[in-house]
Length: 48
Image 1: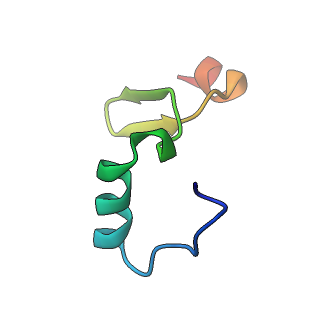
Image 2: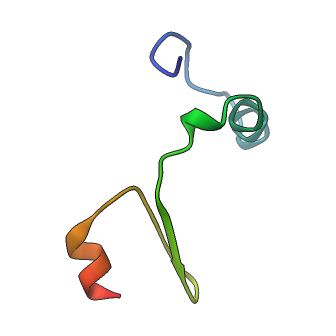
C-alpha cells in the first residue's frame, strides 16, 4: 500500500491515510516521557 502511492503532501493527509490504513503505522511504538520510538530498535530501547 505505502510503496504503491506517493508520499503524503501534508501532516493532515498523512494522518488521514494512517487512520484509513492502520497497517501503514510502524509498530511497535514506545513512549517514555517526551521520548517516542517507532518500530523495534533494540539499541534505542536500551537507552531508555
